[in-house]
Image (tube, rainbow, N blue to C red; front, side, top):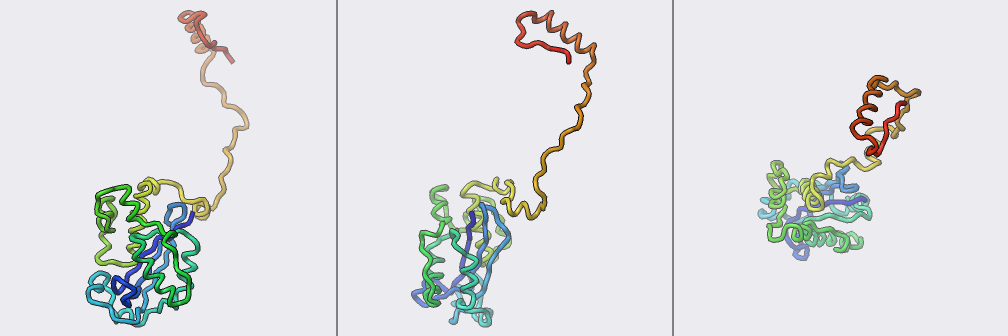
Length: 231
């Protein structure tokens, strides 16, 4: 089962107010196992980046001025997504921005039903908790040392960790990789156990066999449910 965890950084809160995406980050899972495949792109929003937003993700209009437009990366982005379910923290927020960009490029929107929202899972699993990504990372002991500011790819990686915690815990990390990954790493097929051409000689002596038989006959007599027979 293939799933894509993704996150966006934006210039503001509402695409209806002219705000745009400035970064997209995606992480691929197969059978709830990170494959190492990612997709990340900084985007030129074709507008200013308010200082309030810069404080969140650290991306200025100057930094983004020479980056690609969404229209330039949309096909690569769609190819990476494929038809996989999308795991998103606060799915309605990210999807409204992505769908606004799709509308500009003439692509159909992604339905909300395709999304798996980690906030909704957290509400069922840990009712009454705080559901920000930071708070859930602290609750589940996910390392936040690299997160001085928000970043779409980093936040997608953190969301993937939280998602795996919410659906079953880190024990999944102890499971074997999916068959196709394991095969590529090992490069060998499972071999049948070799059989000895001849059986090993018994280590018990004839004297020990006789003593055991005498003990059983004396102590248990006819009450035995089994009988020892010398080979």
